[in-house]
Length: 492
Image (cartoon, rainbow, N blue to C red; front, side, top):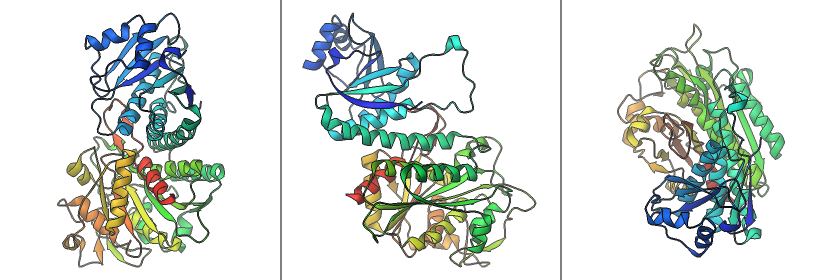
């Protein structure tokens, strides 16, 4: 069932909804709009604020009973002391939708004092994010235990006409994020390379894009020895997927977005420890981010040319699998010594980056759950950002700040290339434990010499192993928002 967000010209005291949500900052007091609601509630709201039953801390919630008329329940959601209201309201809106689902409210009305275009868009994004729930491979609860599904939300505004465009944009972005989360949450036996290819075909049909899918036979013809080395251990047909969105000026160079699509990564012959290996179904979050972003870009109708590339396979141990010590030749022609088969994502991306040259790109951004070393360096709050063009890096970092998909630049000094040199080939596919995220990015840089390029290591941000309050345990949708904000900036 599709979740719908609309704008409605109304004040909180007149909202007739199963659930009215008020987003309040730390230390909030009764404004004129809230005073009218407080009167309708018999002073309940004012007493809750005065007695500090609700303090407005980030993600704090409090449910109040509704009055005889109007909202049946009132949910207070805390904003904390936000540095930016856009990010705080997006988060609060997601919390609100999640709480509405738990309560069993079929619809909600959301009110915040800040009603700028940016904040209304952010609220629409957050409401959509919070409405998402993974149910595909879960049995429904008994009928007498089922609660009504959350079907819609209204954002209460003073100017409905001007808010509608922002709501539509936010809904499109939220839809792209949820598509990425849905793909990432699917188990590897369902979300196969062929499944991702079919998803791309559906997006192309829905959004008027061109799609090209290369399989093992076509990649052999392209001499993609690096990508195919990863795929040789699995009977599943690998896929290189290209989605082309052409709404920019004819002949203008496209932005190319690339995603790592390892639908499951066992580590291959260099097999991973058993504990936690089930999380390796999330090794395609970069690919999910590209598909979610392309769907959103198509929905927004941005006046720009964009290409989305996905390299998808599984990394499995078998009698046919690549071995440590093997040397393969990449699509670009460089020889690679494989010293660790669990450093497979960069082998896939090497050939996809090389393939991107045919589009003569204005800029290339790749996203990959590439290294555990990046999680050690930055934790789960920021993606690692690397690149060969400082102006493009700064542009990507700015898109991360504006979208909430925060990144942090790490160095690619020439000295780091020593880590990936080998006597057996031109380069090797891992430089060891020291500076692991950097040596991985340095490897990718070897295949991005002819265009401005940025690499996002999203290993720490693409999924969470705990419930974060505003989103459940599992995939986060990173980096859909960053990709979309970057492309929007280029389109404008």
